[in-house]
Each structure stands twice: as C-alpha cells, then as structure tokens.
Length: 202
Image (cartoon, rainbow, N blue to C red; front, side, top):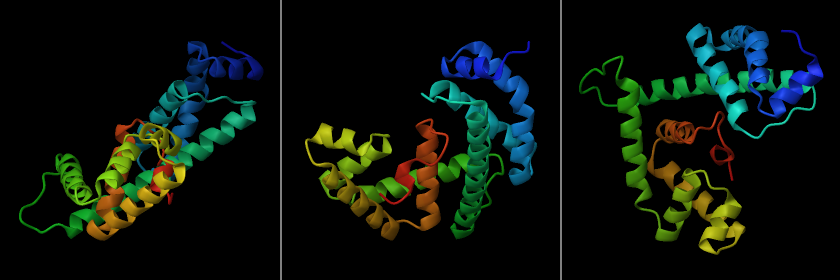
C-alpha cells in the first residue's frame, strides 16, 4: 500500500498501527544494515532497531517531516550501536577485574555479572547519608530533578548537589566499569532506549 509522506508522518504521530507497519516495511532492513556497520552482528543490530521502533510507539514523539524522521532514525541507531559497543567493552573489562576463582558459563555470565554489580553498588549506596541516598534512589527510579524536589519538598539545586555527591562517592567506592555497567542496566530496566541524562554529569 503506497501512502504519501505527509500522511505517513501523520499516522506515526497519531500512533496509528498502519503508520508503524509502513515504518517496518520501508525502514527496518535499511536500519538493520546501517546498524551492522557498527555492531558487525545482524542479531545485535536487529535488537537495536526493534527496541528503537518500540520506543517510537511508546514515547510521545512527533515528527515534522519525513526528513526529520530519517535524521532521527539514523542518529538514534548510531548512538544505540555505539552505546552497545561501549557496554560490551565495560563487561570485558569487568570480567578481567574479577578474581579467577572459577570460569563463568558463557550463557550465564551476563546475568551473574549484573547481579554482582547490583550487589556491590547497593552496598556502597548504603554508606551514603540518608537524604543523599533517598534522592539517588529516586533518581535511579527515573524521577526527574523537579519531581524529586517536589516529592521531598526541597530545591532542585539541592537535588542536583546530592546527586553529584552520590555519584562522586560511588566513583570512589566502586570500580568505573562496575558503575558504568550498573547505570546501563538501570537504564534498561526503566525501559529507556538510550543512556538517560543521569549517566552524564548532572
């Protein structure tokens, strides 16, 4: 079924099923091929494209034109692929930092690593001052600075200061690969496609 570019964009913006069928039909293979330029693995590229298309369905995104949509797709795929490559490098570095007590099963290492990372980070978080810990936990749940401030009846500046204090403390207590992996896992658990603002300096 051939539809106009304008109508296609309208369908996407209205979250119409037909719009997403056209999106998959016309752009899925192209996006997977583009992603493979970075991942070198079809399965990984397909997962990234599927997650992106799902996020377009779920998020309140609006596109003004077909060119704007294409720019978004290519940029998002590139960033997601680069982020995935970084996470794989972090996992490798973390594995190398572990004591060689026993070899990890190739199929189970990711789950085991994530559990160990959570354990180490949450143990470190318990050493934070109560209010600092409370703010950082809300932050990990995905709340924005203004939402945390309203919930705790404090200023946004205080929220930012306490988040920075928590991050600086955790950087001292937990190895950088471990902390980066924790933030990546927390991001995925919240259903976010890309590293949120929290991963960058606040």
